[in-house]
Amino acid sequence: MTIPTPVRPIVSKPQAAPAARSSGRMKLANIKRGRVESPPRVLLYAVEKFGKSTFASQAPDPVFIGPEDGTALLDVARYPEPESVHDVFEALDDLATSEHAFRSVVLDTVDWIEPMVLARACEIGDDKGPKDSIEKFGYGKGYNVALDVWRSILARLDRLRTARGMTVILLAHAHVKAFNDPESESYDRYELKMNAKAAGLLKEWADAVLFGKLEQYAKRVGDDPRKQRVIATDTGTRLLYTNRTAAWDAGNRYSLPPTLPLAWSDFDAAMRAQAVASADDLRADIAATAADLDEADAAKATDAIGRAGDDTTKLAQLLNWARGRVAMKGRKETNR
Image (cartoon, rainbow, N blue to C red; front, side, top):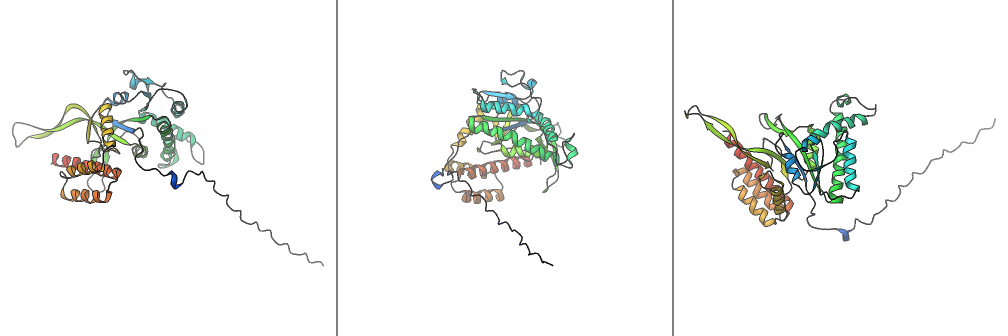
């Protein structure tokens, strides 16, 4: 009986990973320093009929994407009313590739577009296929798919901003929602009228998140001082709030004043003024604002000024924080 010669198994050698192709761009010689001036990405939210569309219509040469009835009384350029998120994509791609004179693009409103985004998420589905409802994905999973659709919209908007130099304006409605504060009792606050995950993505992406509200003040009513009650009344003046408070989210990268009139010209002027602010000017503004803070917050501000050095971005963020703390302090004192 012939014993067969053992066959040595063929062991394939691990293939070396292909050498990374260098673009030649990432060199020390190509490093640049300084601020990069770009058109703003603005998110404005407020209650209905506040004047959001009018504000956006005052931006440089705007074109609107949204329902036609939202701008029916405004003399503005607008695309046909989108019927799906694919129409929104098509309009944004058209602005990116076609010759035109528009300098601003307005989505009016993102909460109106949201059902189209959710419908597209259902079309995409998961590993089991498309869904007939966003809730059929399972708890919260459908809204994560929708975030990718929103990212596709934001990527197109960023393309318009960087390649075509266009200002981007997102408008949204606000509603009052209960907020569970982990550090104190729950309370109501204004939020974007859309899914919280999507709202968070848009707020993080925007350079300026503005909240619009009528100017209000507290008024005591009643003849007997012992039985007087405090009511809120408004002056009729529409204002933009640029910093976060307990009652709403807002913030910006431009170190804007806490409030501005509801006018694009005022917003643009304030943005440009702060864009060229020096480190010394910002430190002076922080010091002046810190004078109205309580002792603990003032100490934090002083310490943060030292850590920021001459970094104007960090100083602007610190000024925003200080202004927000002053606003919150004022609200607490008013409500006592």
